[in-house]
Image (cartoon, rainbow over all chains, first blue to last red; front, side, top):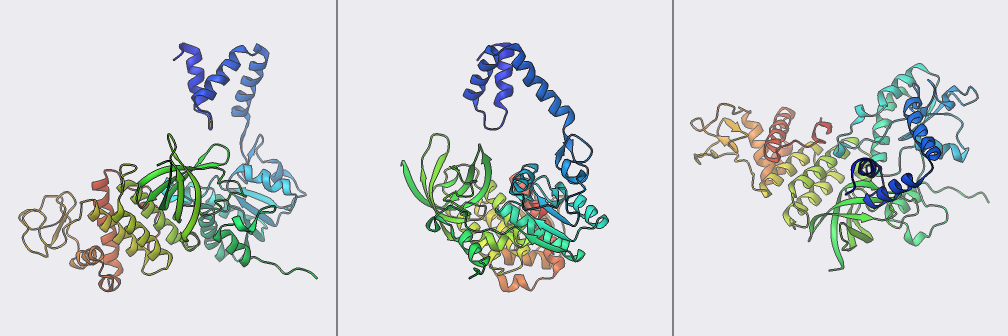
Length: 199
Length: 243
């Protein structure tokens, strides 16, 4: 155990995800040995991120303005909306350059075992948004795990009365893998979603 | 016991570090334990969808210092697909898993009866054998029984006077006669108590004939009885969709 400030720093760093006591100690000593200017850059960045970053009032993505970059962009397809769990997922889908519509970030997935129900996610906001805009297609892009599937099933049921086109991201075999290692569920899904080859 | 093999139901998963997960397992021979599945969150993981909650799997584990490590996994039965695509089944399955975690208080303590109950309940749920609410209530009642908290359904739990009795007491351990009843005893409909007795003994023919009103009342009593014995209620229970 160290004394005073250094131990406080180690304790705080140790609360960060993926940082254990040894890593926390190593980072703390790195900070002590660093130039004052480098550290003030870090503290400024930490302070600014907490002050400036907020959630887009429309889609729930992280932004520094009232609306995020995607919601502000008039060139985006206003008729399609892609529902994702986290802001990180928006970035992943944007990298594919396949989707030109807008997003809706739920803020997680339905997980009753952790006490997270539909009312803890931004589902009500999605419904309000759908009622007031020209959206025709909803793409559900929750994670391909059971929580994501259950969230998709809940959404599909809730969206059914609205009469919109609702689709779910396909799942199947990862590109570059071996068939032998594919599990039964993934392989089954791949069979379900097989497509005809153009000859 | 560096490397061992066991059958298990996945109760819960938690993210760990970059791409790993801590998997809470309910194993057949080693009871409840937590193990690390390395790289399971990567799309190319060899585990794929095998280590999702509700999965019934055959595992090879390596005994580690804090957590054991999952080295190989093979599906025995896939309940996940049927459960996650139906929201009612999913919320029910979550409650079963959470209850199983709470009923197995100590890690590494084998609990074969409870294990069989969990697998049976998930199987019935995935195959839509009975109404999901009845499956959950039957599972909870029988789990309470296995844990030694079986409520008495006919005879008075205090003086053994043969019943059926009108009163049901959470504190008193089930049915109580008019002389033994504490002041807070509930007075459920006789059909409700008979439904609970059917669920407890596995008389499904009698249980499926019950009225929705009795089912609702039974669910309420079972939830309250469970909370009394587990000291704190299940987080997933209020989220369960019932008809």
